[in-house]
Image (cartoon, rainbow, N blue to C red; front, top):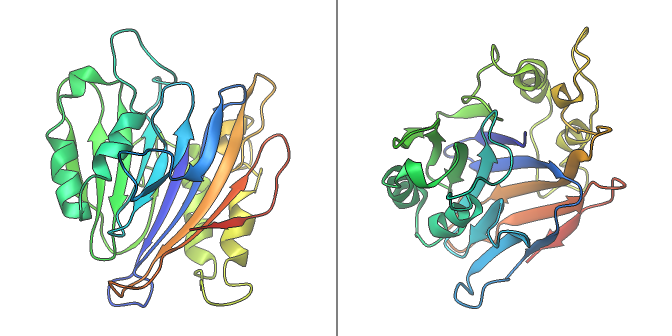
Length: 249
């Protein structure tokens, strides 16, 4: 159960800020975001070495995409394409709006269920595939939103959203230009706190279990308002130890 948090602020110098934790089997091989695909030189994304796709990426047009499994659909299934391929396909487009339209046209029968977020400096969309053929795209409103293995901002279905969405709302918004401008969100991404009475470690933001599943990496991404300005993408490993961030280029 991965997590993506999006802060949309149209008209701000940083109109889209994304935080993401990737929860995965700890023995599944992967590589940090880089330009792994010769046929897509403008794409910076993490590489899932097992299936060849990605869980999160950014292209040179400033489009970001991240994909998450929906509840009950962890891992591959025979006869289904890897959902990580959809991140790369979304990043073939020059805007989030065009990427969302392309994703909504996908035949859902070829994939296990998923949630996806696509965003740029102007728009953001939640792509929902809950099973069957249908895939739908939904515009994400301004403000703070959170996505896990259930629907967007669904506090009733997700203990993690219920516990952490108010904490992100109360936190100091990131300031990518300040020395400690990410401090509040950094602290939330590594929090292993769950709500009172919740014993499932998946209710935490940062997951550690005894059955080979954990938060393996985390990311902070800020998209600037200016067309020529450079995004800020900070990436860190989280397994087996929680490490520091590296800025990606």
